[in-house]
Length: 491
Image (cartoon, rainbow, N blue to C red; front, side, top):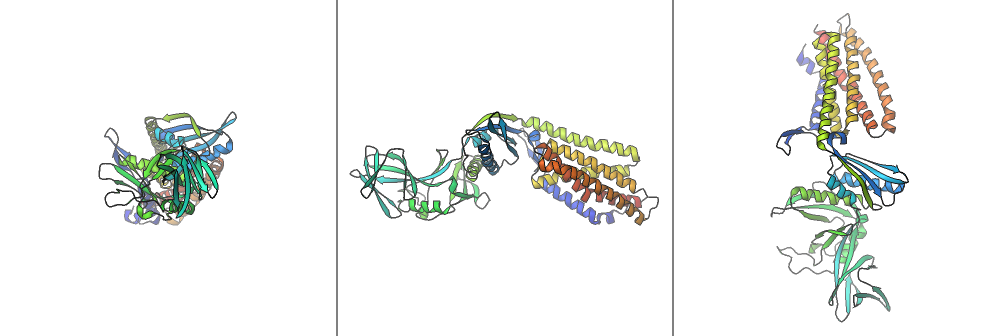
């Protein structure tokens, strides 16, 4: 067998290239675990039954089917934005209530619970202080003065001869801006102006150029990321900040406004950001949001959490986690090894049967190597398209191995021509491939209904089986046929 000529065959080159791409996509990397033992990490996404994870049953306050579907839409965006992509969300009916069932592989229970329990009501506010003298004061918005009277915690807005009474804690509109009367003394009144809400966030950027984690120089870390806001909220920012003075001691040569940008999530303040004086009165549609973290991991976690809330928006109603269960990673690892053993056992069993049939290792070894290559390519494809490998997918891989071996046996049998002429052998291999294509088309046609109307594990089985069949028909089996052709020539 001429190895040099064999390696120059286009089919062989294509197969080697595909295996290389699969290896890069899988990305095997040795890393130490918590006990210091080296383990192999890959880019293959494992399902809940293999990796471990969390199952949750969520009850919306308004337990109607429409509300459950809205909750699913928001949570899907939120959890994807946080990086928890391997999940299954669906509405289930329990008696007269519609609940949301959630399954996530590799999730942290505490963080998941925190993300779920946040309704996601987001606001950013800036305080405006009205100086009171003689029971009167003024507020300047965009160079327009508004007059107030103040007495015994009651604030009166003067509009010509009309007066509007505002009590402590009450919200009111002024010049298109929502204000909240939050504090007062004998000399001043504090009004909290809403700059933007969750609905004003047009886009949240998470790419490396507009989202980053940096050390502060004091051992802690900070995050910052950019958001795109609606024009209306940017104009509100300009109105609110235009007449705010600088704080007295900005420090380090930087100048900031005397009022901060306060960030609230579900009516709880989560951060307070300085506003650079250079942005005073500007219509900013893409401001930076930043925050601290004691460690790099905490800063990254806080940034991803805030980004996910901003991307998803608020839930349509309050939700309650009525059931939360965890599948331990140790049990998941056992499933991984059981699955690997199942694949190896399938290949070994096939090898024994083939050897008993042909009594020739020249055919057994290529068949085993072809089956192993198919498995590797399926895993590479799954890593490339971020397809989750679970027990159903493992079953699909084993099914693909079985059909692949059938095709390879057919190729070997058809190659047993009485003549060694190349033309005769190629004609017989062509006949074999006609049968292989028809068989593959029949199997794929049988899987398509499961792929289109199936759900969960059924869909995973169908998809993996189809991928395995396509890889075999268009890549590995033509290569195997070329190997058999060269072996027959060498006889």
